[in-house]
Length: 157
Image (cartoon, rainbow, N blue to C red):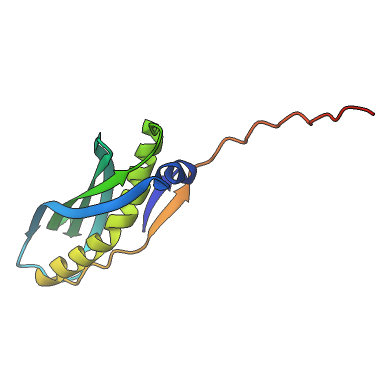
């Protein structure tokens, strides 16, 4: 199960001004030991980072890594990198922290189905049981409680 901690309020502050324009595979590396075809112990990781933020375009790189091991031996090693481009139409500059949260949350959300299909197809073609990438579980960050407001006073009549 994959889990990512995300500040949903920060993601929402950016999402209202963002439009997904493009998702492209920009790098793939895949190796498999052809002598092995049994079920594997798998490891999966990912990371989405802002790689460009200029002239109303936000570029996010999402890198995924899958390894399959048998008896402490690496049998499969796959790395896939996607580049996601968003148009940003905010009337004011967005905070770096909000954009980082957006990259982690929406970059993952938008590229995940592509990664799922790619890994399933590629591992099947390698002659090993197809890898089934599960659901990404987003966990909200713990927000500090909002400061209490002083009660408003109404003038006495």
